[in-house]
Image (cartoon, rainbow, N blue to C red):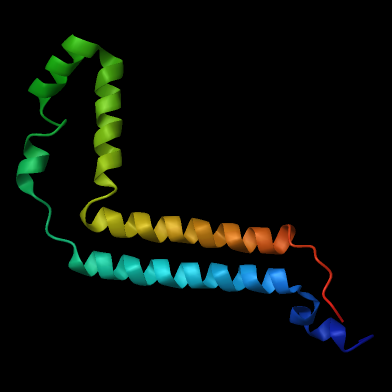
Length: 119
């Protein structure tokens, strides 16, 4: 109730903050659109890949005999990481990475862009 500037918080933002907020919004929107397109265009999962992967007990036994338990865990981690970049999992990965990047833009814009606006 003391002044007109208190009612409009956007008037207090610096140009750098406005650019970072805009960049964050663009990144978020672009990543969500890309994730929807990837999800719609993703092929059906291949049954042969899952049948002969790390889930096969014979493969796990042989891998453990050669490299130990750590090698089995590393193979499972590697298969999980490779799975993030295929099919519908890629759509989720793109959406999450885009949201994290947009969040970083918003965070930097809110906390670290302390330029005083030119009045």
